[in-house]
Length: 64
Image 1 (cartoon, rainbow, N blue to C red):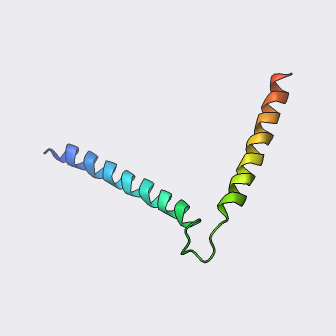
Image 2 (cartoon, one colour; image 1 turned 30 degrees about the vertical axis):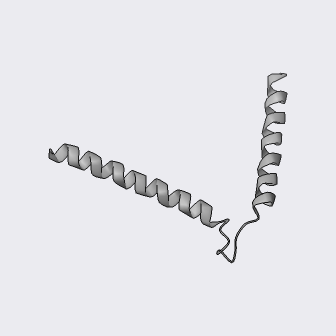
Image 3 (cartoon, rainbow, N blue to C red; image 1 turned 90 degrees about the horizontal axis):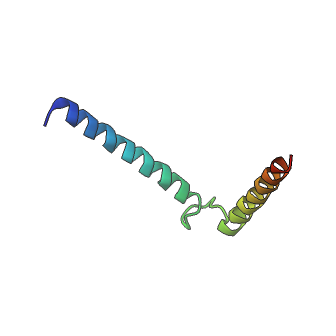
C-alpha cells in the first residue's frame, strides 16, 4: 500500500470517527442515562413549528 493510499484511508477513518462521535453526542442528548436528557416529543414539536414557519416564509416569498 502506498503512503498516499494509506494517508487517504487514515483520513477517511478519522472523518468516519468524527461523524460517529457527532451522532453519539446528538443521541446522548436524548439517552435515558443522561440526567439532563431532552424530551424527544417536545424537541420534535419545536422542529415541526420551525418547519411550518419556514414553509410559510417560502410560500410568502413565492407569492412575490
